[in-house]
Length: 113
Length: 113
Image (tube, rainbow over the protein chains, first blue to last red):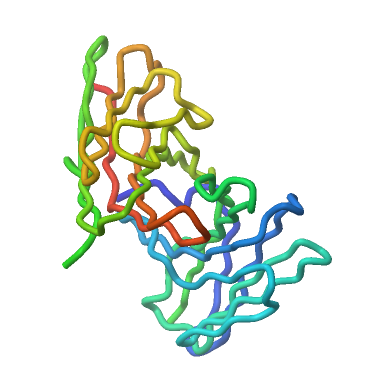
């Protein structure tokens, strides 16, 4: 399998618990943020996005929170399931270049049955 | 189904050899990208293309080349000048020139023989 996930921060949760994965960004020009899920040996899958004019956005079992004051983004997964085990990373996009994305290194989520 | 297809899934390169990674999309997306992923690191941009017959260098373009002769296709050549080519290569595409998420293929794993 892929070696994606080596040397990454790891979050271990019990099945059924809620998970919170965090991401910090540094550039004030960032105004669009995306969370991706990457399973071993596969490409990243889009989970949810949020624009800087919002503080919170909800999807199915997932919520993204954006705190622009401290430049912090979080992904909350409700009722975590074994299928949620993967590497999660955030991406930011800046208003001055829609084609350039900046990616975090990711957090590995382990869901214990 | 619409999506991004990368081939091959696994590729081996001999010393001094150039190899080409294929990326095809049927999403009718204008922009396409190539990233390199190494263990424990965020995605790093190699090249991107906003329209046919035009492309720009990313952060780590040395040792790589691309072409964009068709909207659907954005092949990446890893040349012999790239001395550390072993990595997971991801192709992505995006619709339009605005805040939109990138969609990824399932990657090509390149190793040195």
